[in-house]
Structure formats: structure tokens, C-alpha cells
Amino acid sequence: MHRFDLWVCCLSALLSVASDASPIVARAAEPDNPEAVIRRLVQANAEKDLDTISRLMAHDADITSYSVGGRKYVGWPEFEREMQEEFGNVEKLEIPIRELNVWNKGDIAWFSMELDYIRYVGTGEQQTRTVLPLRETGVLERRNGQWVLLNFHESFRSAQMTHPVAASPAAPAQQILISNPSASAIPDLSGEWEILEVEDNKRYRATLDKNGNGPYTQHGGRFVTTKFADRLWQGTWHQPGNDREGGFELLLSEDGMEAKGIWWYTRVGKHTGIPPREHGGTYEWKRVTPPGSARGPLQ
Image 1 (cartoon, one colour):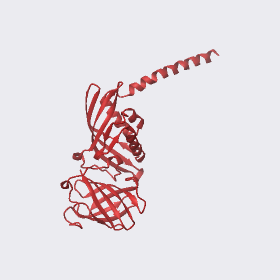
Image 2: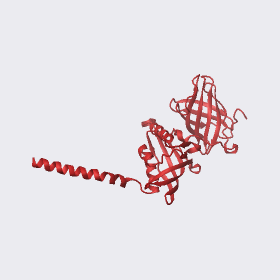
Image 3: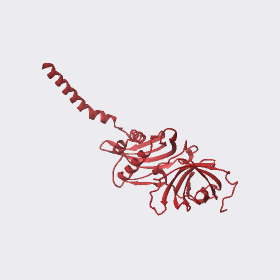
Image 4: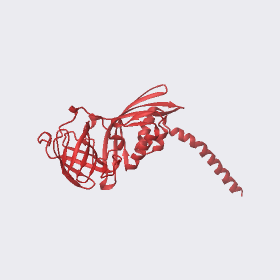
């Protein structure tokens, strides 16, 4: 009985110490300066750790942030939904920081950062890898001794997009929208393109004019280019042969000879209102002729 009482006393003491120490360990693990918070947020994003992201971001209802092409988030719930969807769609993420500069004055800090957002979709031989080179700026505030991210603004590093795609891409939804370019920003897209729908191994050809518009050999289809900026190519497709239509987005290679990206449905027969980018697949486009050597159908 004496030995049992002694064991209980020792166990109670150990539990008491462990209980007292836990908050200290948790507090010590928290980032305690603006740069540490930013790095921890990037790490949490790569680890798909939404709890940590939530803890280190402000939840003010009127805070506004922007992703690529002006994608707008107002408040925490909207951003949280996007992150949950992205984490559910990818197998893993890698987000190496290329450059980070941080400044602060009092309880306010601001930063500029360059990073690569590397996205893996699928597993095994079917896994695809997309690299999106980004730049980001943002503002942090110290609240009750803890630094939190107030807002951010992301954009593509156009000068760094020489080899952005390592394999068949599956671009994340929050990084799709593109601003309207000037006419001079659109390269000559004319000629014949061979198109591969990766998942179905389906091949056909498109004959485009210099602005990226023209027919393709699949159910009497036609492509219409609507936006182009920093080699990001966006448009719509229409197939009267099977009464379907949708959209696409491609990343054009630096030499203009190939493009990779995604396509999706917006209408199938009488079924309309299909949310963009939710149902579709991935594309690989290759020029059959070099730019300017063949004329598109509308020239």
C-alpha cells in the first residue's frame, strides 16, 4: 500500500508538471516576429495546416486580399472555403521561399516575397506537377503580443516564368483569373495546334487566327480567346456537335510552341450553370507549324 501511494503521488506530480509546462511549450513554438509569422504561414500552407493559418491570420469581416489576376477575398470565411477546396484537390504542396523582405514600425509590419507554389495532383505515374512562380506583398499587425497577417496581394513573377510547368498542370482555382491585356500583348497564335486531352488520351487539331480564335476537329468545335497576359491564355470552347461548351486556361511556353493547362464545362445540353473549373481535365497543346508560318482561318 505504501508503494502504491508513493507511485500515485509521483504520477500526480508528473502530470502537474506536464500540465503546467504545456502552455509554455505552445507559446515558445509560436512565431514571435513578423518574418517568423510569414515563414510559418507559408509552411502551414505547404502542410495543408488550416488551423495554423487561421490562428496567424486576422478574421476581421472587412479585410480584403487579392490573389492572382484580382481574385478577391473579403473576410476569413471566403478565404477559408478556397483553402479547404484547394487542400482537398491536391496530393501535396511544396512552397519554397525564394526571397523575403520584411519591414516594421511599432505594431505594423509589411513585406515583399517571391516564392514558388508547386502543386501535385494524383499519385504514381498519373501524378502531375505544376509550378506557379509568385510574388506577394502584405501587411501584419501585432495584436495582444501576437503578429497576425492582415491582408495580402499575390501576382505572377512574369520575368521568372521561363520554365514554370514541370509536367501536366492542374492549376489551382484561386490562381486562374487574368486581367484584360492590350491587343499588343497578344502574340501571334495563328496556325495549327495539336491538342491532347490528357486524361482521355484524346487528340484533335485546332486551326487558329493570330488572336487565338478558330475551329477544331472535335464535334465541330471552336475556340475563342478572351484574355491573354504574361503567357497566360484564357478562353472558351463551343462544341455544337454534342451541344456542350466551357472554358480553358493555358500557360504558353516562352518560345510559343506549346501550351499546357486546364479545360472545364459550363454547359452540357440543357444543363447550365455548371460552376467553372469544377468539371473538366488537363490539356497539352503543341504547334504543328511555327508562329507566322501558317495563316489561321480568319486572316
